Figure 1 (cartoon, helix red, strand yellow):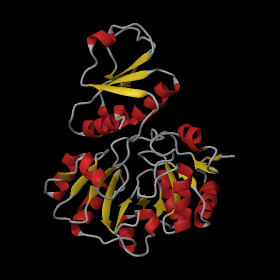
Figure 2: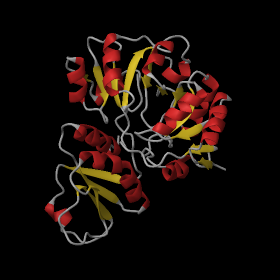
Figure 3: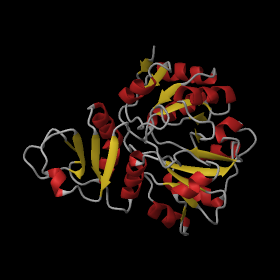
Figure 4: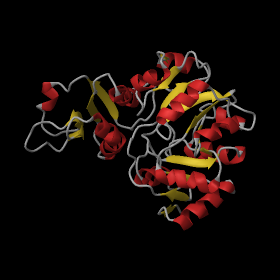
Length: 328
């Protein structure tokens, strides 16, 4: 039976021992909850794949306490240091050429490894206590909506894991931005996230190349979150630049409406939901996965969702919605 641990000093010490012994612990980050294992223990990392039903060709992200630790597992660069100085700890993952110490199971047999320094204080305490790089993909069955609170973790993996460390709801709510930095002169945005492309380009002083989903699926997966269908509820999603008037006018029925911003009505119908009360994209991002899960549990036959403006954080929001809606 899964045990939920409050983040006391004693619990942190105990869970650090669990990880050092090759066990699994679901942990909070500022993005989503992750399923953590010792990232240098191949057998422990294989347990992550088994618990999630995750395909072996989908690599893991290694989480570190400090940027200085990157050189223990990967080749570093001046461009990487600039990004680390600007955005770490935070929701940014860098793909780098790996060192031999990193097991092949972590990297799907590739010569690259994805790394980040998370900001959430609870996982940082755990990283300090265990003194290990932690592999930690999202703590949910592979392909389903990512978990942003303890309840989501227990709902998806409660029968498969023994330990969950409670850090409260995730603040960012979307997975990290991923940048391929193996060639520092030509950085590639692999997945949009909480750190926008504009912010990254300002620090790097160069434009980011942007790999299409088709390009990313055509070759080996150098980082997680590259598939065209991912983060998906069981309920079919239809996307709209703006929800059509004829849908908005319908009475409550078997299809749900998901607005970006709260509509200006005194009392909303029971089949309406929204991601932000004020139009804040940050609030919309933090609520997206929890709202998709709520609608999925409600038994609607379909969800009609409104896209965000295609700029800034809206790019990441739309990326997750499009993958969730893809039926391929």
